[in-house]
Image (cartoon, rainbow, N blue to C red; front, side, top):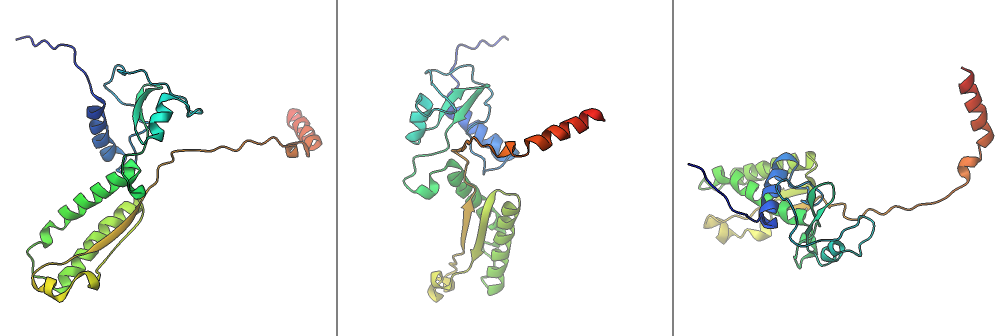
Length: 207
């Protein structure tokens, strides 16, 4: 039986989801989707102007509005690192992705501790387990830093007696190099040793 497929549209959302999963696995959750070649698209439905040096383009305008777009430069690739969060700490896509990844990883890692006897030893085991996972990501350069602790103020006697315990952790995500500034200067200081450079060149030629 021969299957026939009509003309379809490969949406940017589908491409982004697939690329996010691939990037998480091959590079890490600390790398944004921006400036990675995307396989699959054969075109862009709306022409998007882009220039690496000039932000006065369609892509530059969309980025300034915290919108990631797709450009064609050495293949198709997403361009932009921001999302629409009102919280500046989560404005980078990688910050949000890091938070999601860590929460899912830590929750899954804590599964064996659920329904165990709630003792100080269990609390310490949970903290040590989370700390080991956070340290693993810091060592892998997926995070700048992270820590975990037990806050007595967050855990009242009444809560503990009812089997409720809170563990706190924080982390610093890896920022994305979004704008690279280059300062160009003309200088005469390399002419100071001009005569010595000539002598050095003559010595080299005589060998």
